[in-house]
Image (cartoon, rainbow, N blue to C red; front, side, top):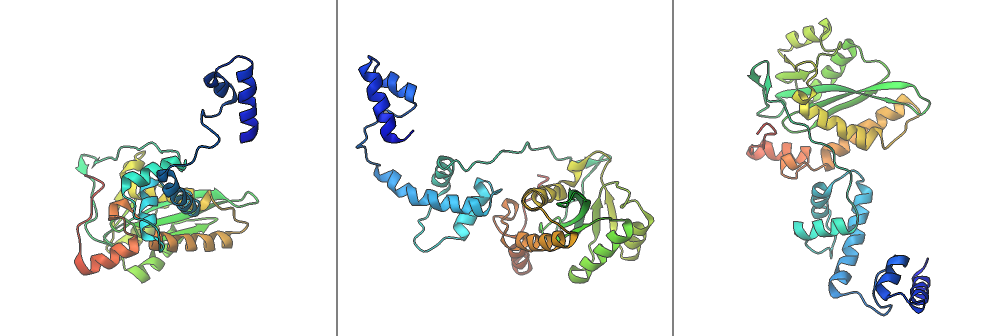
Length: 289
């Protein structure tokens, strides 16, 4: 029902004896004049609503805080400055909210000892797996590897099978570019308790940090990274072959490291944080605090 049809329906109900309020409630329309004009504030907000909607469509899984950082970083000529309060008001006015995830508490102790936290880049890597299906239904696994301190995505590697030998091969390939870490945080999966990984860690002086069984929150950094991989890569795309999945995963990983802002890095991307750390070595906020 268009605006003119709503007005005619309201007038017909009023002629039958109903008040304007009652008629508008039945037709589900606002009690306003057809000649009413938008105020100055609404006219100023209209182009900003269009701009925010464009950014939200480019980043469909970004919430208000990350979208605010993206708006400031990708400002065009003529884009007005917005403080956080105005941005949040327009964000809600444009109905750009996404469903919230329930936050899970992070464990602070493992077997009576505090969890070890990274104090500089390339100190602690964290490793895990994700599972998904190709377009024709075949299951594949994706190895995810992250640097805990800088949130730098080191690897997102899909494959049909990932025995411990393949895990070691991926770690060696990554270490050729970034160097070997001091520690590797893993869960108690069969790939991680195998002899091959233990031998690799001994040869390269890498300490294996095992979390408690059934306590994924003790590996919170890779779990957060996995949620991004699942939400922005695997759920958003369907691949026909494992080669397409590998190409898509590598393209997403590079974009994650170069354009993905992090609140824990003061709105910087992992690459920007690493570049700044090499110059100033600024302290980083800890998730354990």
